[in-house]
Amino acid sequence: MKPPYKVLHDKAMEFVDESKLAKMEGNASAAKSFLEKAFFLEKEAALTTPTNENNAFAKYLYLRSAAYLAYESGYLLDALQFTLLGLSGKPPNYVKKQLESLQQKLHSKNASFQLIGLFTQANAKNNIITVEDEASQQIYLIQVPTEQIQEIVKNFWSAKVAIDAKVSNAGVVLLENIRAAA
Amino acid sequence: MKIVERSYIGTYVDYILGEMSDDDSFFLQKAKLEVSGIGKETPTNTVNQRIRVKLNQVQKSADKELPSYIIVVEFGSPKAKIVKDETTI
Image (cartoon, rainbow over all chains, first blue to last red; front, side, top):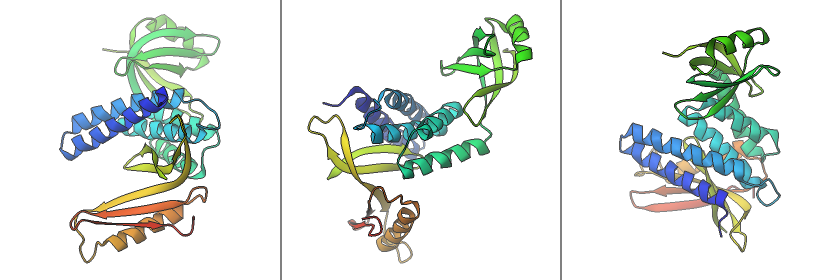
């Protein structure tokens, strides 16, 4: 019987097929939507696949697949995080090369991104704020400069904010600019 | 040996050949499979030429951990050709 993560992965690949068909039919928005669905399923598959001897190879394939799907769907932070997750272990050499190639592409894009969402939490000890992106409902942990955290909390607490951020080589999201969202 | 896994990598799909465990819960990987297609063969775009291109790609990226097979399908006739990369097998 297929384990749940394999079911998720197979379903993700079905959405990839649907995306390709939609693209061939000239329906770009459907193609994008299917690819995003594939990414979210693959993300769950990759994160829930157990790390053991039997599944190690599949787990790296799923991590790479999730990284590329994130990249193609425009989720650059996720793409970088899945890339780093894959590279942090011992992937097969050809998977490693492909992950490194994606990492280079991401760095050449400077892995900058913008998000708009609700500023929900702050951790003054570690200088981290938490923002929930309204488009994807994903939670982002963003490192802010020590001298700015108090002012950020004072000005934007519980407000909808627009953020410009950059991802460091280590996968940490660094705040570049924060302002109240319109 | 059969296709036990496929995964997404940008513009193409990575196929893995191998064997499934008895309970279908995991697989044992044995080879990679590269699949390519041609609509209709022309003098400048033949199955054999495509095979050579794919072999070249496979050998450049080969990690020697997994052997590779290449299939090129021509949909005009239709016909297909399968080769194994001798440098990795």
